[in-house]
Structures are given as structure tokens and as C-alpha cells.
Image (cartoon, rainbow, N blue to C red):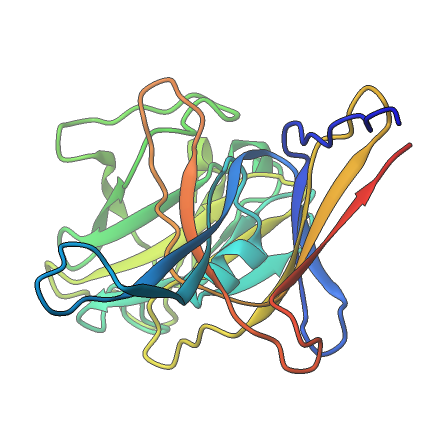
Amino acid sequence: MVLSVPRTIYGVHSLTLYDRTSWVPFGIIKVVGSLNLALSGSFNDLFGGSSRFAWESEQGVLDTSLTGNIKEVPDFAFEKFLGATATATAAEASGNCGTLTNKVGTTAMSATIGVATATALAGSEANLKDALYVIKAASDTTVDIYAMTDADFDKGTDAVFFSDGLKVITTQTIVSATATNITDFGFKLTGGSGTIGMTIGDTAYVYTRKANTGSSLITVGASNATFPEFGAVIASQKKGTGDTFETQIFRCKAIGLPIAHSEAAWLGADFNMKALYDSTENAVFRSRAIKA
């Protein structure tokens, strides 16, 4: 009898997460660093008397955990691993200027005595940048504008910080019922309908996005966050022979997804999942090994 060719597994192809009820996928993660399904067990030994060795031993519990490293972070990964809420926005060909919102006081953004609105500046949308801006009342009629980062300052017209305090616009006058153009940044501030009279030190903020093919707003740490169970499918890399190997885990829970930023390096996020017994399938997981 000739021995069979040994079964081997090579590489990793993907990790798919799916809804346990319908088996409809949430999505697939293709940029995977590693996936390790650990089946670590323990023994319960019987000791007694003067013997230094166990009289008997029985198998204890098995810990079925999945650890791994992924190098892409789709919305559903945040939702399943961090209990996050991810809201996707469709493509915005002209970018977006969000809603001006008060942070300190009530006069920096005011329909009557402050800045009523911040909106995209027609004809200058190409200058919109991905940034969070803070608008601070410098006097009763002027504002200073600060940006939280210059990572996208080369979009459209180049921009710079004026100081180490991250100021980008100094003492910009706000005029009643009149638009003040912040041209280099692609938006405008429109004064309130009444006599402008802001309280010095009051602040408001606004987010802007450049022209894009889609964006997501991901909120982590909400007081009502939940970590729902899901199913997972791990696929190995197809071998040169055409052989494939796939493992379906029917019931998973996960918590944690560190987002590490390193100098001149791609993101790699380590995660932990627990594989649990599924009474419907009467299994924890099943693997399919296919010979081409």
C-alpha cells in the first residue's frame, strides 16, 4: 500500500465574519497577518499517598480561542471586536463641511450674535481638507480658527500653521448676515442675523472632508455598547496543488482591537476571539480539507 500524500496547510487567505442566525456575511478581511486557533487542554491528575506520580489522569477542559493579526480594519471589525457603532457615508464628489457646534459657551455659534453656519465654499471645494477646526471668539466680532492636524494641508491650496498653538486664521471679522470666505480651507462662515456680539473665549467646532469615495464615523465606548456573538470562516491560502483548507467556527465572541500607529509602518491590529459550543450544530467548529 502506498502512503497518502501528507495533508499540509499553507498560509492564510481570509477571515470572514457572519450573522449566526442568517449566515449572511458581515464582510471579509483579506489583509491578514496571522490567525491562530488554539485548542489548549489540561489534565486533572489524581495524586495521593506517598507516590510522586499521578495514579490516574482524566482530560480537563479545552480552551478554544482564536488570536490573530489583521492589517485592515473594516467597519464591521470595529463593531464586532469593540462594540462600536460605525456609520458609513456614501461618496461625496465635492467633499463636506459638517455642522458648526458650540463647545464652550453659546455665542461662537449663534443664529443671531455669532457665526450662524459653516458651509462649503462654492468654487473652492477642492480646498476642503480632512480636518477638525475650532473657532474661538477673539473679540465680540472676530474669531481665530485652529486646526487639530496638518496631515491633509496639501489638499488643494497648501495651508500652514501660524504658530505652535495650531492657529490657521487670525482675527477674522464676522459680519452680520454676511459670508466670510475661508478660501484656503474651502469653507465659509456666515454671520448671524443680528448684531454680532460674541463672548470672548467661547468656542465652536466643525469637521470638514475633502472630495472622497466614502467615509465612516466610528464611535467606540458608548454606554450601551454590546458585543454580539457571530460566526467566522477562516480560509487558508490555496496551495500550488489546488488544495484548500477552511474552518467554520459557529459561535464566536470577541473583545479588543488595538489600533497601533508606528513610524513608517502599516497598521497591524491584534485581536482575541473565543470559540464557543453551538448546540444547534453540536460543534464548536468544522474544517473542510479539499484535495484538488
